[in-house]
Image (cartoon, rainbow, N blue to C red; front, side, top):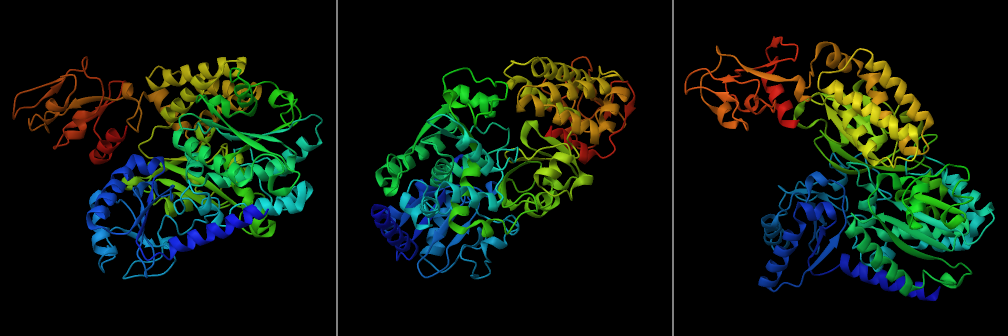
Length: 639
């Protein structure tokens, strides 16, 4: 214990020295999203400028602050003034901030997002007043984007591992009781009470007991777990210590897909630091608690997000689910009692043990306590990672935090819960985001993916896309999933090319219900959700595709053809030059024409036509003029 106490003293001194430094400090968002946006070039330019001027300044690589749409992000510390967060910082902007703000008196308000300490400076307000952050409550993500994830001292300076030290004082029963009173439910999607898993495992015969952190984040458009592991790995590892103590485990595994190399790298650094500090191994912090953690890299199979398939993968077997019972808490990894928990679930535990159950449960809904992180993606103005109180409405997330639909088009639906989630329509925008409400709407919480769809999204195509993903990722072990997902996908593909039949809607409904009820694991049980919810809320689009042979969103290309109106065509040749298959012919300043046998329905001609000469016709052969040319041009571009 004394060794850890010494580290706290050292960490506080280091952090306070950094925060009160007489030298400038630049915190650059260098998680995967920041690096992809150009954070590396920003840091290179800063290093070059600092060296050229001979300045005593530091550059600290931090994780993702959240607003991915504003990457690269940078926080500038100028001695004697509030730290300012800047967005969309390229190399030139970084150099200008150094020159004008840090070395001068101009805070560069044109790139400023806000002051980190809540103060105001020359018209720059607090960061948490920014529209994307104003409704957020940052708990799990509290350190992301602010501390160096490769520095244990930075984590300790933010009260890191104090939750675990309190857990040692409380003992397993006290920890279980604290988490029970906090109301923490699993953040992996099902929302099962966290403390119950621990009790089941503790009561199960067999030793050793294992704890697994499920970091196999496979949902398209989801990056919550990756961001937390990259930005604050010690928070997750501290959570594993607390969970391991509560359930009586002696060994833990972080199962992380190999596509997350930066997350794995930072986890490896953090584990080395824990061992050096005596927080892993035998008799941790002078107690009788012995625990170690290993990293297992997954190959990226979506089905390995299911707990029994994940266990099989760690054992060196093919990742395929097995029937339950027995449940993993009774017979899991190598036949021993095992608890599998999501990254975000574990990230909550240090806060609950340090701050207390009453503090934790002070926000959230009656049945869903605390906060939830979501990855906002799709047709939305402000994309990124957000953390909000459970019980907040979809409208608040999409419009207040996300800024509404990008380009000003109408909101159509939001798909929650990843490829196994459902599509929730505009009329349910005021739905509270909690486990029960989303389930009642036909969707799921999932791990936190949230994809926003606008009026130019075809719901038949959306169902086809997500079902295509889950069908491809199905392990094929059980017949309902293997055969049922393929049958549904084949039907959707026929509908999308104009070969659907009236009986297909009832057929889809029947197969979807069979797959949902008869599948072995969660992948198959939830795979029909996109089909069932689009049938439930957007039946008119299925009917249009089948009975009218038309896709009003102009996404299903086989249902959309193009014809040039000779009365409108000015013969500019823009469409001819844009056509990738040379299906358009015509002389300059004379009406052009499209060869329907050659046309591939890409819509390039409609996009470039300056005189709105392109009209749309359906597969029925009926010629219909585009109602709103600009709207349809944007639809073609987006599809």
